[in-house]
Image (tube, rainbow, N blue to C red; front, side, top):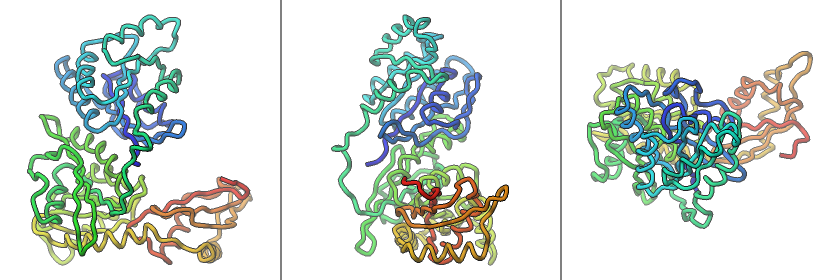
Length: 441
């Protein structure tokens, strides 16, 4: 069953990012007292008790006037309505209920999505207790008093949030079909690629960025084998600036990646590699999915005998954090190399589920430590006792050592390279869990 998506919505300066960071358990969003400062990471994998979910911070509003603020609040609420399973609507007890709160509350009620009303900055129930009752006027049910900064009331808030998660009985039926998410910035050709692979115009294609409203699942049968391609939604422009469109397209990508086995990151050959591309690809990498970097619109690029080689070099530099990714140069318009996708997807999936015997792994590790001595610190040297494979998709290995602190990232990467030299694992990330000997879990 896919993880639920919880969106945090609210006007500027009510404490959305602080609440986001508190629930996520780490500093991810930028927090300042100036409205509209949330710029970077707007999603995180979060958990509470035995529940795991994706948390989305819909920040980024820069109010210029009241009218524009209301317009942006509507856009933000629309985004949450379209993508979230549950919406946390954050308000500010100190400013009370304002027009923007009523505006968004009306939209949220009409959406029929579950909404949990959070009244933030209640640092003292004695001082602000009576002020909370005003928020019943939003007609969104019981307001939950919270102080994000002081971590007060978070448990009660989340207890209400998880009540609205899909029950285990509502989980989707087991589906053995390989699921491939097409991800990338708006207008890179995701829908066009789906149409070309399908052989018919099932998905609307337009030159207007973000014409696909929702994620669309398309079954494509190739050589008798069914595959599910998830065409991740763009965002309708509605006069928004391109930067905002790209930023919010990330949110829908998170949900699609969660459901997928392999992600095809589409890039526009005519635009080159952008920060938006690396940001979206990073979602697939962090989720442990198999990755193909597909450079689309290759037919529109003027080429010589070195063009592909030079572009590949740039890709490896920009995506250095995922050097395992496969690379494919395609044209969704002409169909150039698009049929190779199936062959590549099958090969990556084989690597995702590959298991290596423990004895073989320990032989590789023994040879690796003999060739390159483990690091030491203050006279204490790292010792690697044992390695075993714990799981697949992605392949995950547990290494038992004498001192976890001595296991530097660079040496873990060295062990990874030795394993890849022997078994490849092309197209899939590899995960390592470092434990000290004697640890049970």
